Image (cartoon, rainbow, N blue to C red; front, side, top):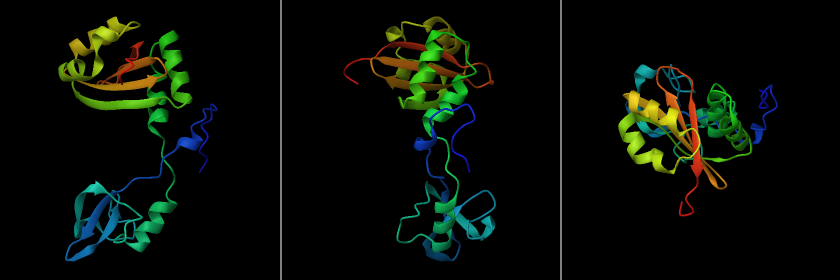
Length: 182
């Protein structure tokens, strides 16, 4: 698998190991398996398993050896910065969007990425009064939607807020000075 995107973004070094859910085979407790869409990575059908509420840890002493090998050999996945970068590329062109894309390519911290009720997200995570650039469209989207995705990125002295509409519409980007306390 080639980890370097075609457009040359430097995310290859930040890719993450593949993640799988955890399960146990019914009637055979004590060994944890990695589970995919159809069953365990070692070939046991999903109907014979009980899923757990955590991810499979290939390093755990109780991990199935065959699942461990398959999980460790699985292709890497995009990091949070790469996934958000791909979404933000669809935002309206402008300086704030371009600065955020650069920050993500350089490894800016994705401090938050949630989907939920727009009013709650706006009240608890956006800090509207601290935004200085692009605030109008972001606030309008938060006021108009019932549920919405919100990402917050911290880079140097800037805090970026990305609103990801649930209807597949263009992401909206705003930023403001980063509070020195956080």
